[in-house]
Image 1 (cartoon, rainbow, N blue to C red):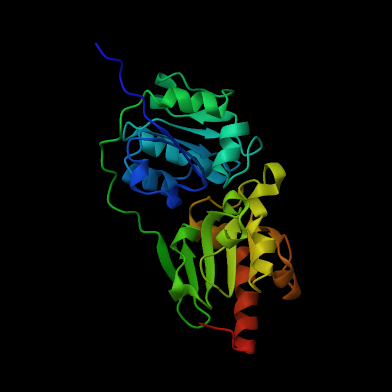
Image 2: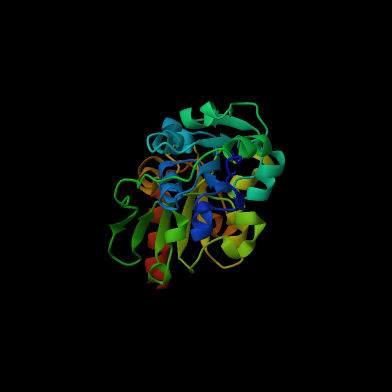
Length: 277
């Protein structure tokens, strides 16, 4: 009897940056392990997935997607934010150490303390995901319609041309994808907020900030312990700033402020200067 075919391993800096090639593969990706990222993985019909635990954070949001995928029978694990750079799939494969595994992954032999590469090999035993996830998660919310408008976007991948000149409050981590500055933000927003994902090894969770300085975009991160990663409304409602870039600091924004204060200050400045959508 021929041996069962092993699922291929696909490495990506974000689960939002892969497409049909992910179907039936084990995707080692630099995204946080929150529910939105897990939803995207399920829609892609992955056989298994490896995420970054993003410091776990408030309400364990950084690994909540593992339980979501377990409900669909898809094995998934997360590597420690302090062992490999978030937003960098290759670094996760090279240095990542597993901190969390869902029940289907545990059944394949995955568990805390295992090297990422070893876990990916174990996940290759999984079959392609066949279950369709529940209907699409609503992930974009217009918080303030008056210019400069404020958007809550659960993923920075949702930023588009319509968000030029607006304030985008995201649920995404504040790390560049693969260290590339062009991945900081898809459009020239007036300002942007992210989750610091625990900041993590090599301060990977905040590397978007200087890249956005170069584009004149005020930006900051909120503590992973203050807001649920992957949940932009949580960023806005409960987020507490940990880092801000020079552009934001020039407006009087400081670490320790609430995300709402960040938005209020930028909106006042945007109104006064006319930099609006």
